[in-house]
Image (cartoon, rainbow, N blue to C red; front, side):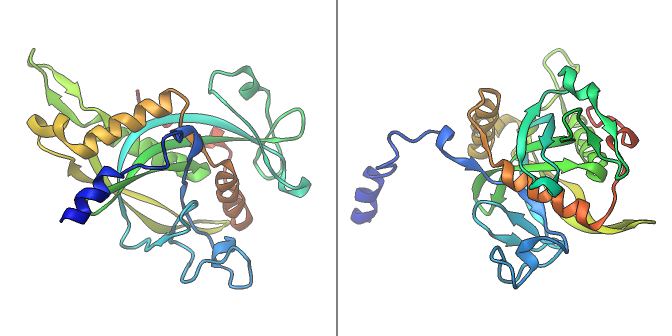
Length: 266
């Protein structure tokens, strides 16, 4: 016990000049049949990885898509991400708010992709900043949803908006996003052009009882994470987002974002 006490005194040593600006937020994404992590001959192969599993882009861990993962959503936003076409080497070029004028300058190509005047692609992306819950431990992550998964984002946002409590005036108030846990699994989906794996989202329950919520460590961690995102301190690993977009498009021609309803209910 004495040694543990000594260790506690040294907690955080070496990280004095490290901030959230210096740490990449991992992506949690669904592996596809074409993902390099599932190819044993690829340098990015992850042992045991299969299509339909959930992949952590920083730790390189994989999670069983059937068993799923538990997460606490902390913040949501929509971004339009610009990519160089993969035929030209691919690569992240920038990210835009929905109200940016550039969003309205795209045209659709033969693959139903939104193309900017400069020839680059623009992909509508729903972004859920979450805490990944593993036992009594949590870690920060980002779950991006594009193309057919925009419908899943809309449903998740609808579920979140339904979490309310009765205020002191007797009227219903919307709970903070980070007050509810969800279970995410993966399911096989298909249309007349092919099949792929997508998200399935299920509410688990409250992080804690209402009168104990503000004292809950996970809830407080969620508040801190949400503030970091709003302040621009959450560094996104865009290469992982590019891989997700590429994996899906290799397997199937998805509809354009015009075919998907706006997912923001707020």
